Length: 388
Image (tube, rainbow, N blue to C red; front, side):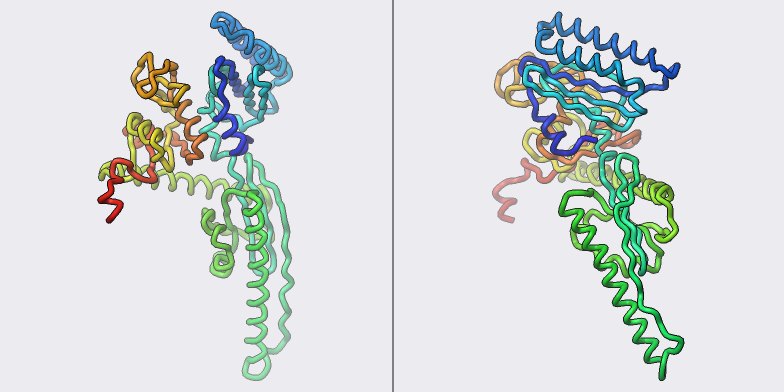
């Protein structure tokens, strides 16, 4: 999958000669094992792209990249069920190639001044690395869930002190033994928490999920470090000793899906509520474009079926709905965009703005399929309000 730094690199790339080549391959169900029909369709698409580039005067800089992609397509043959993305510009000696989850909208090839990154927006949550920790007083197992694969990373074993046959006079020895077991369990949970924190400090995970017996959770939670708690998405019931990796994966995916659904609904409601009371919410394309341009946006919400035409000035970066020939800000020529959503995604990536992809939500469709949670409102930042 593509790391955040790599996404920002792609978003920052600019080819004034319109030689930035974006190629997406989405595997389809083959008619035969050779995938011959699929290969023919993709190669036809690439040949058409070469002809279009030559007619537009940009064939010289794009032709070699298109031919190289064409060679790669020969060997894809389904790509083991994975999607593929290639970003290239021979003029700037730039070539990046990635295997992706097979969740792209379709196979396509695009030549432009910037790379076409909107299809990746829907995959960004798929690239999250979830640390799944299973724990009880004597056992702990740590898994990583990433790219729909579960990997067991670490196994902890805590040998608790054994209790004698008698609790001693008035039960004193029994109470002492129980306290010793509690202290040993607490140290065990602290060791696990330290391991989790070390993973976060190495930027080796994005969110945390804990699996345990219900009665163990109140003992585990207090030992988690503050940062780990901020990325904790919940806990679920499971037996750490006997759970198989497939069971862990299934339960973790269910919990993540439920958490994501709840988080999306909460954020949509918050943004709509803030917009209605003239607060830190922006709804609709025109208002969101304005907020992006002046740096107000904290989180961008984009519908999976969002599409709108517009223009962008590659000199100053201004985006607009009106199909004007020249930029309203700097007067330089605008570039017409069939889908301004791609320019919006690129802008968000360059600005390190959090993005949330919204799939098939009727309420969100009604408000224009685009919205934003704002960090501040520039039109309300008056000296009087600052003083208050």
